[in-house]
Image 1: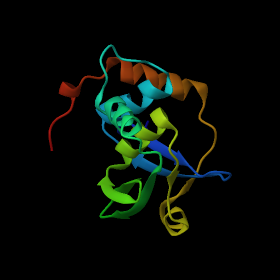
Image 2 (image 1 turned 30 degrees about the horizontal axis):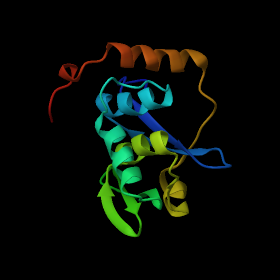
Image 3 (image 1 turned 90 degrees about the horizontal axis):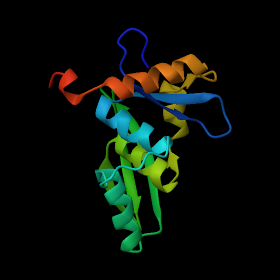
Image 4 (image 1 turned 120 degrees about the horizontal axis):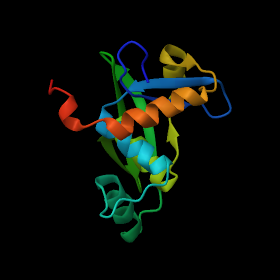
Length: 144
């Protein structure tokens, strides 16, 4: 959680390193990612669950995600499916990754430019985030 604003942040940790890409996401997107990380299975499939199942049912086994860059403070991403590249939001790529195990990559130059050094989050921060997700409602946010 972003301390000043209380907004959820997706931290994509560098594999084998100490840096992460901090990507601010909406409450609904954070909830979709957190629910999958906690193993919560909804009674009916949510969009990301449906997409993972669709890719599997159609036999798409070469799927990867990539954070491609940042422009005007907004991160951009791509989803590659069997050689086809689709523009995507980083939060959608992350939501698919936690459900299916796809790998998310980012250019080293992007990590050098906007990556931040991170420490292991304190347990109380994780609990605060879970409490936020349990109480948040999409109506709590104004459309921009």
